Image (tube, rainbow, N blue to C red; front, side, top):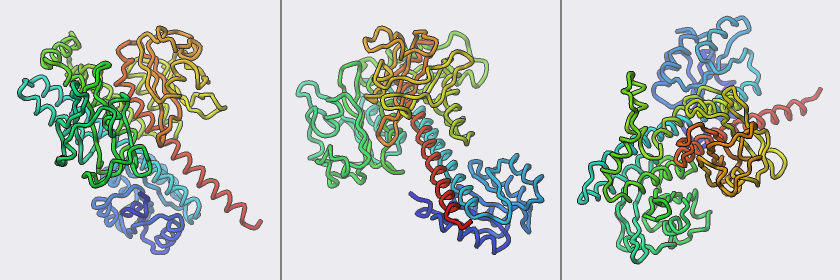
Length: 517
C-alpha cells in the first residue's frame, strides 16, 4: 500500500502558512500527502490520534519550542522519524535536536529536492523499523504458542488429543495472523489426508472428504516433504483447482508438512492473513510450528517424553537473576531450540531497528547471532559479483579470523543451499559427501559445526548466510529457519532502501543536468 493510499503519514508542523503550503506542494509532486499543524499542541494531539511515520517540524512555534515538541513526540511514538526545520542561526538547537533523536534537519529557506529526499528517506527507515517491529511481535507470539503447546501436550491424555489439535490450529492463526487455518493428518492405511481440526471456518461436506497423498496443495506439500507458499494463486498457476467458492477470501496461502524424521504425519495450512498476502517470513514461522507439532503428535506418550527432554536440558545451577531465569525457562529447553531461536531473532530485530545505514543494519544483525551463539565468523553472501560467484556482503568475526571474501555459487554445502534454497545444519559437515573444505570452512580452514541458510527476496534466493557455531547443538535446522527469515527481512529492507536512495539521487542528478548553466 502506498503512502497516498493510506492515512496521511507525514505531519508538517509550522506556524507559517506559506511554509506549510510550500511543503505540501513539494511533497505532493512526489506522490506524498501531508497533515498540517500550526502549533506544537495541535501536532501532539494529532500524533496521539493518528498513525504517522514522519514529521517535518519547525523549531520556532508560537506555543512551545520545537525541541519540547520533539521530546514529547519521541516519548509518545519512539519509532517516529522527525526532520527538523531551522534557521542558519540555530545550530546549537539543531545539535540538541539530534541528541533528542531527530532523524535529519533542513535549513530554511527550503530546497525542494532536499526536502523530498529527506522525507522519503525518513519514511523508508520508518517502514524498515515497522517491519522489524511486526516480525518481533510475531516471534513473541511464536514463543507463547510453543510454550502453550508444550504445556498442553504434557498434560494431554489419549481422550484429550482433540484439545491439542484445536490448540494447534489456534496457535497457527495467532502466530501468522491468519483468519483460517487447518490441520490435516495422514491415515497411513489408505494413504489419505483427513481434516483433524480447523479454525475460522466450517469445512463444507465436500471439503471434508479425504485427500489423496499428492493431491491438492496439502497433498503435494506432504508428498514432496516441502512447504509451499503462494502469494497469489491466480497468478501462480500451480494449483488451478483452488477456487474461491471453497470458502477462501484470500488468494494467498502457506502449507507446511508435518514430518517426524522421514515419516509423514500430516499438514498445517494457513490462509486469509489479515495484513496482506503470505510471505517468506510467514512460511518460516509455519515451518517452525510444523516441526514442533509433528514431534508432539507423533509421540504416543507425549507427557513422559517431553518431561524427559526438559529435564535433560535444565541447567544444573539455579538462576540468580530474572534474565537468567528467563534464559533457563522451559521455552529454552524445548527440543530443537525453536523458542531459543525466536528470542535470538527478537534481539536481532531490536538491534536492527536502532540502525539506519544499510551496512550497519547487516553488521548489527550478524553481531547478535555471533554473540548469542558464541559463533565466529557469522557472514552473509550475496550473488552480487561475477556470474557463479557469491560475494561477502557483511560479517561478524568476533575478533578472530573472518570468512572467505568470495565463494563459488555451485560448490560444496554452501553452493547446495544457494542452488536449492534449502538449509544445511550439521555438527559434522565433513561427513557429508557434498562438503568442500575450500568452500564450507572460514578463511582459517578449520572444520566445525556449520549452519548455512538461504537469503530470499520475492521468492528468489539472493544469497546465503553462514554461521560457524562452537556448540554442535546450535547447528539446528529450526534455528536456521528463523535466522533465514530474519536475515532475509534485513536484506530485503536494505535493498529496498538502497533502491529508493539510488532513485532519488538519479532524479536529482537528472534535474540538475536539465537546468540551464
